[in-house]
Amino acid sequence: MITTRADGLTLDTDPARIDLDRVHHWLSTDAFWALGRSRETVARSIEHSLVFGVYVPDTAEQLAFARVVTDYATFGWLCDVYVAREARGQGIGTWLAESVVAALEPYRLKRLMLSTLDAHEVYAHAGFSAVSEPEKLMMITQAPSTAPADPATGAVKPLATDLKR
Image (cartoon, rainbow, N blue to C red; front, top):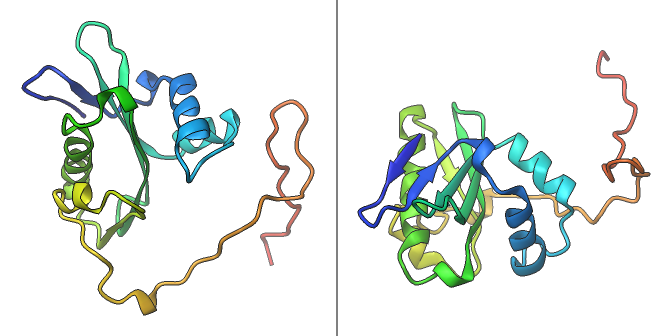
């Protein structure tokens, strides 16, 4: 999906256009929810998500990023939304959130969720609202793994389990 704003900014869902180094820098150094996140983790999260990038016309410089974890049938989780500091205040975050919602409309997901500390108004413009029955939601917050990591990639080695039980 590619769409263009009146000012020429382009939104694209092609993962090949994502500037991995830039997104990793944004998330690992400036996004409170992802501080210290490894480049390998960012790359893996992009690989397994529907991604959105916002780009400057002519230079193709990336100004914003978001990703959605979804099954394309019932559920989606909008996360890692980031607008470059120098591009904030131009409505890019609102446009990005609205574009995500529009891109997922054909799938008729029962729920599209997100978590935000301070951007409620941005997401409200895209149709998000507070959870109506928060007592139904549960979660596991997992501390960083102490499992051994692969020295070559830094990835945590999965536990050996028998899935055929």
